[in-house]
Image (tube, rainbow, N blue to C red; front, side):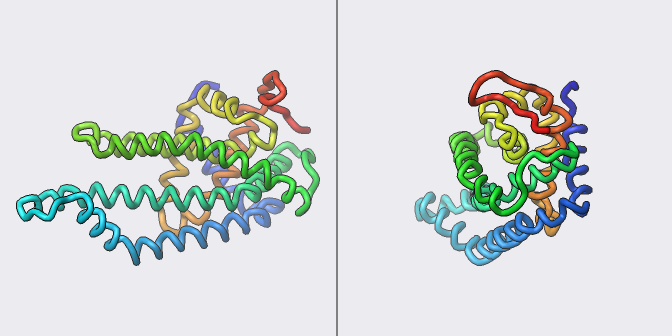
Length: 259
């Protein structure tokens, strides 16, 4: 299949539509509760501390010279954007770490349903066994993500370059959403992290199309509560239909199709 952002977006929509199905909805509950609690906490923190953070950054970065007051009006939107980005991504990282084993298990259940086969043992014992591997994988994603995030933050403060940064931020966020959620089914099928990135890059526009819808959905109140489980389900459909037939050689990088 050729890369297609519309097809990528459709995988998420199909994942969202699949959430109420029997055999799936019971595994959606825990990721949903985690999302509600953490995003609720992020909103509470922003409401209570946003003004204090802006004031602190203004006072720390600008000298107390009256003739520089006009810079406050220029810096305010940029600082507000930085705060929103940092809080949003920080809480997303925490949510993904906590929910990783549950998301991996949800992906297993979805793949089982799509294939009509049994790929793992059911129950809490299987979930507990997934925890170390899931957390290790989240660390790999974090190590990939943080250096790029810091580079983009620095570029956002450079004149002229910062004019295109909103577009760059969006593309970066879409790519990271694709990596975040497509990793669950690929990890379940023993696809290494470097190999997972290679597979997504081979159809980059499809991956970005999927991640773009996830990212936009996270900005919509109430809808964003369903984004995590819908993205996991959609990414699993994406894996099964586009990548699961691929088998790569090597002990650490082989894609094993179960069932």
